[in-house]
Structure formats: C-alpha cells, structure tokens
Amino acid sequence: MTDSTPAGLIESNGKAHVATNLPIFTHTGIPGKSALEQLDILEDVGVDPKRVVIGHLGNLVDPNVQVHRAICRRGAFVGF
Image (cartoon, rainbow, N blue to C red; front, top):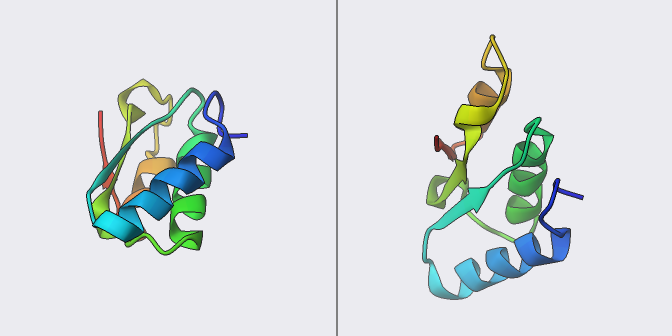
C-alpha cells in the first residue's frame, strides 16, 4: 500500500496519536506516492497534520517539489 509500510500500521500510529497527542514522523519510500497516502490515512483517523512530519523526502526526485508543496499546503511538515 504505502510502499513498504502497511496501511494498518499507519492507521494504528494515527490512533495512538489521537490518544496521546504525540507527534508523528513517518518513513516514506521512493517514488514518494506513499507520502500523500500516509497523510490521507492519518487525517482519516483524526490526526491534525500540524503534528505530522512526512520523512525521507530528500530522496524524492521531484524537480518541481509538487509532493513537498502538497504536504505543506495540507499543514504537515516535510522531513529530509
């Protein structure tokens, strides 16, 4: 689903966040499609994107930084 991370694991992390309000830092694979999928899942379970860093985006080949911008527009942070 999200490259190498099962959707259920992302959802479980989101639910744990809702219970604890601890921040979330994710790991993404290449090509980076999983970054937005992860954010979708987290938001679906009630996570505030302002508490999320979508990580490992320095490996993403995206000359126009479209994925990075989409993440930031949704309120989450970009990690490298």
